[in-house]
Length: 283
Image (cartoon, rainbow, N blue to C red; front, side, top):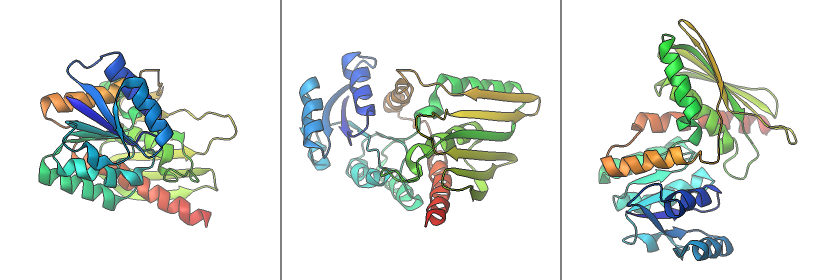
């Protein structure tokens, strides 16, 4: 399976090349081409790994069998993914799937029409710590209340609050589900925002904080269950993107997407509401 990387400004590009081409974690699959705007980075990555390189995504149509859309800015995901969706290719679109509900709807509608399989997620969603939390929650009778925390950067050039904020949102929804309702956003000054919603009978709160200087803000969740409370910080080791790639490769090999359209849309819906409220408060 020939895989192309489209959008190479993130360090995830090096992770993908290492895991697939250098360490051969996924036999039968090989990254063969990449596409990016920065000619210096494009040439360096291509030269180091003997990859075909181009600045035009359309050049890869017919040259690859699957695509990874890796742009940091989610607003670039629709235009860069659409040619490959229209060609029916399976693809992983890095978080966020898009920076608007409208763009997300266009991606999902196009994929339904062509049969293109779409995977998209924050790596936090599929880490071992997250999976361990899910097992503990089930053991304790299921969630009643979920509180997730993480960093965000409302002034980021990569989509404002979407940049990094999407991680804690996806963590909360991985633990709680996709059928969100009753969204309420509270902006607590320029550095804090809380998003509240419900999924069924579960109350979900996502609190995002802007890091100060070198102070790190971990991804974490606390879940109140019927029979106890679960709390974990979600760790990210050097191979944290392997859990994402594993789902993507599994989708290619089985023909089954790891997430439903509802799963893919929900985090963008909640994140878009957060971003809108933060932008209004910053005016």
